[in-house]
Length: 295
Image (cartoon, rainbow, N blue to C red; front, side, top):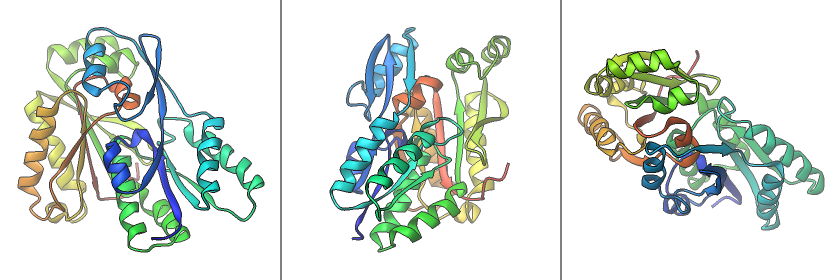
């Protein structure tokens, strides 16, 4: 195995066991629940079912990004183990953590001349970010060197497709992503917004679809339209969900039926506390490799 660390943040929304299995290091974001501070540590401190239940009951949440000092300590620990680093951050279209990581990197490279710390803006989120890390781990394990893997990540990150829908508009209204009037009308009419992540890593509303059944069908249609090789797609597919496992499983079942060459079963993970504090319960997110995001 090549001598460098592959690294990300906990907002890549895979399991602790998966990160350990793939030898991917991660650093945790922070969040507050009813005024108490927690690490977004893949559900160890606050299990997803507890978080979403409390949110549905009216609990307040707030998130905070990783500080420069935390990044410096995290990176330095890896450097002291004698390995260089390729670290991918949560999308800059969602968080300012990329800038914090870059400042920490620059400070440490002065202290450790000749070492390498690559920081890449993933332009990805949740288990889409996780699917990107999983793919990079495959390439690392096949023997790809650090410089080449960094270049591949920069050149291909926009091919990672993200599509989301929500059946509960409460927290989209609360966060200002949807006006109260639109949210009220949408709730009355059972409208489920379909969104994706654009080429700048921002979450963008794309369609307003009436009824859960139709939006589940539509998100799979978007995969057909945007996946590499369409229904002959032979890559991996990840889904993340916030307290709506049945909806996620319905999407997964359709995908496994329509994409017979899929690399394994669709994998489903919980949306972590950082992303979930903004989406609330009722969100399903679909991730796969496909067309380059250009708008």
